[in-house]
Image (cartoon, rainbow, N blue to C red; front, side, top):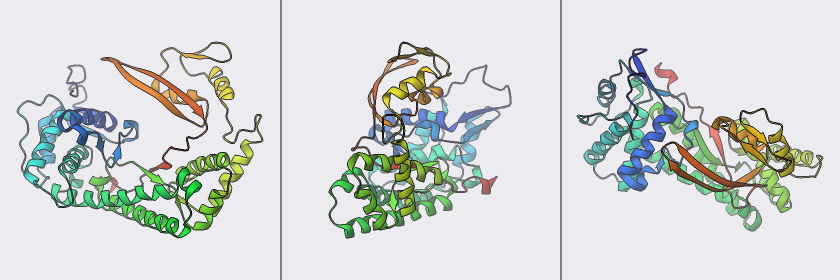
Length: 362
């Protein structure tokens, strides 16, 4: 799978531009073929949605070899470009393999982790300004610290998911887990602020709800189960809008007020929008390709993918189903969206990374 090099795209503006979302998608597919499971998890998150990646690789003069040479000269490890460059994503994998071979073992990392870090390193080097590229030895040490902090951050989710609120009996253990999570979040932010290379494609982080005190946590725990799930969902909305995962008593009370307000609507649903009102909202949608079919069904006819998500009609719910590759250009989807929030869902929030990243190198 390579980035197409067509005569129509080549040379018209004296350069070629590969968007980060396309580059990451192609690299992940190539990495899976080359490395197996090591290609399934990049940039510290599993299966990232490619639209969250920002930036672009700008290849001046349509010269991929020169583009890569300029960057690999800063790697601190000599690498050889493939004689035949079938595509930028395949070249990235070839270079990453060489970095893995020449680096050898690294204390605290297994072979799969080293492969993963090498792939993301070369990929980010294509997007970050040349002056921001770190030697691979520096990057892998920093990435290791980052992963340790992310592991601690992920553990904090166990103190702020629905199961914890239902079953936790030791407030001291909860307080300790949340404190460790807040410390880990601070370290993650620090590492991203220190390295434009590390932060280049980490534009979002899935963070758990980090309650700032046991009082706020206990206020949520005291709620009835259905109300608690709705309040937690509103808290996630609030912290994402605010841009950090901290949850204090004021945030909890604001979320409770929002849920109470939703119950003033017809039907008294804690989540505000029901499956009936969602269908009605879809029927009234002006999105291209929406085909109403009675009061219980809506069809889609060539609706743009970027507009499809909005057709859920504001329903708070969870998706179950499958996506199947049907042919070279088609993916078949079959899924159900269930009203409410799954009590088994991981309670993390996508928080936008505000690290300075590339501006200092402009």
